[in-house]
Amino acid sequence: MADERTAGDPAVAEAPEAEAIDAEELEEHAEIDPELLERRREALAEVRQFGDPVLKSAASEVSAFGPELEGEAERMIALMQGALGIGLAATQLGVMRRMLVFQAGPDSAPRALVNPRVEWSSGEEWLAEEGCLSLKGIVVDVERPLHARISARDISGEPVLLEASGLEARVLQHEIDHLDGVLILDRTVREQRRGALRALRSGESFDPSMLEPPDAEVDADAAGDGADPARPSPE
Ligand SMILES: [Zn+2]
Image (cartoon, helix red, strand yellow):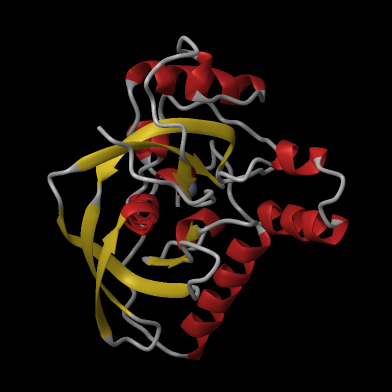
């Protein structure tokens, strides 16, 4: 299901990597359970990577609820957890349905949302770094509303309304973007987009500190689908 919006984006075929928990960083720590790393590699191998046209395509509304959809949600949750991510959109697996899963914090239960929509978001925005399970080694600054009200269906088709703030609001907006074919590269400033694209082309990693002087006043928190819990940035 390719669309016409891939123009200008170089195709990159790369081994998949982290959302925000950095794979190399993890692997440098010998004490990390090798089974965990292996499970993570397997999960990431299922996630479509930058350059794949599905990541630029909008997903379709879900109209049929039932065991098949439930199975898909379970698979997505298992992959998100295996990848040590905090969110995953169906399109990242090449499934063009409006469904996402998220778990914004180790103590919260994973949830699936079907046909999610940002119903309202705050004028107040905050800037934080985001990574993406579909963008190997890339972290960019993204400004997003601090609060968002999301309407959706749960996995059985019942309407749900979510008032989300902070990291949870950020993850949900990130995943809903995926369902519209929008990536964090489309949400960041031009210099970072350019730097990230260059890194993706050469298979290197990128983060905003590579462009800025060491003392730049940018929030160093990471977020996105696979983030460490982030705090709101002051400005
Ligand atoms: Zn993502």
